[in-house]
Length: 212
Image (cartoon, rainbow, N blue to C red; front, side, top):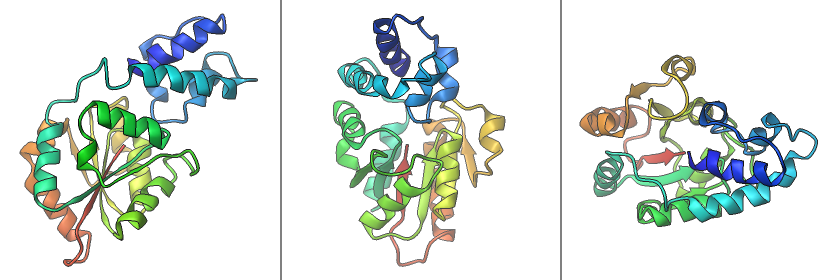
């Protein structure tokens, strides 16, 4: 809803029709420019990015709530010495702003945006997180096909959540190692996540958790 609202603010200023959330949802996870190409700005979509990000920064983290189960999962992982990171297609500053406003920023040792790297499903942002934390393996948790593909291409075990914009069939087509309805469901099965990590990394390494 926030992405749709920010995009529509820009489209209105351009004299174009607003998009509904159903039109925007399939584009979530792609570079933001794709929203504006889809909306009829094919020849100058790049010019929409700066005002879009400014509009999103005005509302991100202020008119939204953290999904149920998120804090419980983060608390558990942080208390058991997981190193947590965010690999996102957003600019780093915007992702950090969202985490700070949601009071989640203290959980993460690294926030890596795609302003200078290839966007997911390319694994570049995930690899940058691993390199920054000195890890070679871990678990990628995400709610889009782009997250799962990026994690797998970086050599990580992958956990898919069905709480995002992609359907179960779409998510399953990428072959995640595990799938959960949402973060509450994941928290209820946190032991399985730890076992997955232990099977995909050397015993002496601390696992990394990457979240879009």
